[in-house]
Image 1 (cartoon, helix red, strand yellow):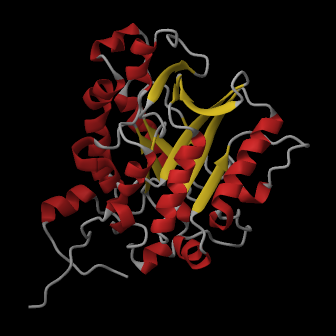
Image 2 (cartoon, rainbow, N blue to C red; image 1 turned 180 degrees about the vertical axis):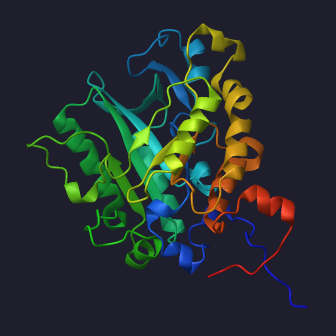
Length: 323
């Protein structure tokens, strides 16, 4: 009896996009399930206050709650993350750009983005979506300056916004050498010089911030997102937000997330059925249990209509991988 391959192969996190079957690569990028990290550049926050927020004057207290990831960008990419979320701050007294989440990162935006480019040069079949969520203390000219630097860094890797009759797929991007999708969420002014055709807009990739410390509410919002028509991208946030001093009993965001969100998030991911998968899914601390979050999200791409990861894990049925 010939050996068969499991429906879902072992996931090579470092090269998972390149390893997808051709029929999946031909799907619209908005139909793929893509793992992302929330506040991607916060593994090395300094004691410097960034954007205006409570408790930033007490960095020893703020840092454990502002840190959303344990590992730098390269390590995240090597472990399957393909969507990066950056909040940027400009300090006019130092004439410098910073990554921020209440406090400023020790790693500059340029350093983080250069690490993305190096990874992509070494992995020519992979694609990374970079989302500039917020610009704090930026004038329009500074935004132009920063975004122009991003385009100079990635050059021909940047995927232009497709025409209405063109389907943006992994196959198309890989065939044309496009490896970077840039999302710019600030409204361009008439005098802005940033090329609009090289940046996707918030309408192309909308996102919803749950703004709650209740994991059930977060999952309910995520389920609603799965029912949205996939004619555009959508970023589902599996994140909790502090709601008063009651949450400080957990001592830091990592414990808070692990105790309140992680288990429910993984249960939901394993029960999503084929045909209703979310697009981009982001969360804090993507490293728990040997990076089980990105693994689960990537596996969603292999589901058939109506089946779930839980079904496959309990049935122990092996079938040929479709291509």
